[in-house]
Length: 221
View 1 (cartoon, rainbow, N blue to C red):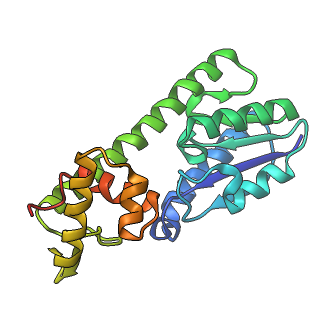
View 2: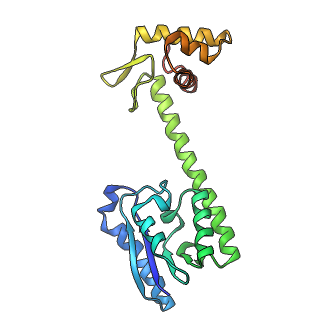
View 3: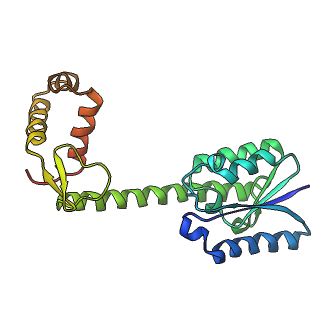
């Protein structure tokens, strides 16, 4: 049996912080020592977000490609390997089918061979995914609030506005087009016809109108 460790930090800044990586590595090595196992290698994922599926991360891909039947993977915490429930459960089933064990120290052991551990694993994976969605929603709320105050929050300026000194300023020409599209939509004219009238793609018109609705009209016109 070969034993591998997997540890991860999420940003480039954290990646240069030896304490974070060393703490995780110490937990992996300590657990292996208590089990009488020798760790063949520790895969260090430096500066990679947990939102990236394990198989799409450089070291995660290497790890999944090297493990074979009878091998064991140790990671200190669930969120070091996964943030998405679908990624977590899909990878778990794949490892289980290949006969590879997956130890999550925070869950108390091998989650591929213990029914209770798998149940906890499933629940916590869903919780982690829900927390990510809550974070996204908080970010969206902040952006909507900034937009309502005319503050540019980064990214591409919404149609109908220019960025001047860090603030959103109405673009008269685009505002005229935007108002015309809104009026047409309020009269139940199809997105396709509106797009044709303004020389745009239907999906572009839909995104423009949806964005202004979602962000509370951006700023008072």
